Image (tube, rainbow, N blue to C red; front, side):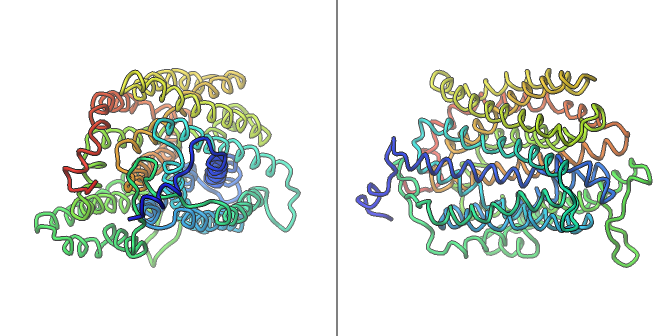
Length: 538
């Protein structure tokens, strides 16, 4: 444990300019994160044309191929952020995912592009757990929602810039170096992140973990061993061995193997069901192993199945290995409800983000030049929505302990009404206006959820708390949302119907947000007490 003098020396001073520099750099990294992630949106029509892709494959590239590795690697890499240098974790991860984005531009088929997207997901999994944990140690609790709101504006700035840059490159690229416009776009947005990784490493200082909350905690003496131990809990056969080493009962081991069998069965059934509803020309074979054809549907459900089993196995392991982490996250009703709501919220965010330009090109005759308008809307509405949501959330919370959730509930009602208008109008101007205000309301949720999750755990669990959130929003939101819209579109031939079908889930989402509001105040008030009761020495 660091001495009191050392702790006080390294605590960031309130009002100091340096911590705002750190926030600015982390915002820029988050923007780079989403430029690299979201650029598939504006490139979708050209990827479909050049690589002969279906809407479901676009959803798979945008969502599942990225989401599975982003979510699964997010857990061990969050462990690394909680036990090692967050600055080093972030700088290395940034350089890696930026390199993989640039390599995406050298792809010539679905398999190559999908592999590069997996690499982007692995790299980006290191980013936000480290960044969120750093911010929580640079800024005091009373303004964290506002700080996280500013940080998450980087998401929408990145989304906007990806549409603008991608649209401009596609519209103006002269075909130099034998590259198509979409290939050049991947390379152009990927390369700057390598330089930014070096800037992070050289200019950002590592603060003492938990010092601002009066709970200074040291780094792990074996951070990389902790990462491998964490990863081993997620994948068979190591997952079963890990449970046994942790002292799991025979009943728990049987439950783990039962979950594996159930997931395997569901992969088969969902693959067969997806293939059955698709017309023959919408069932492309990605590659073959002997006489066995691997289709997009199989890849989708295999990825989701692996993610579902890994999440289940990890939760079982963490319950045995770190009962405090389990008690404050998955084992806590408020946190569990909030994470479930975040997963469903992700379905709307990612599915609409994936197909908004493809929809506009099909129904409103938009060309790549519309990327500037869509990008400006995404940047301004998204950044404003997160800033307003975080600031109003902090203000309302001071008067009502569950005020952030009530704000989110109201925003979702408005978002639903506006989105129905947006995807039923034949007028481009109305489409843009309703998209602006719908996005303004939808984007209130990231800072609210980030701040709430951090308030529900003790400092050493900040990275884990973010990783669990990411697991829900990635596997459910990113893993299911874009692919399901693409699948329904391919099956029905109607992208509008596919997008609007998402709103069958809205009653469930509203119920979860309301339930979270009911249990949240008591859970936040008793964080330290519940941690001590679970065995934490505080």
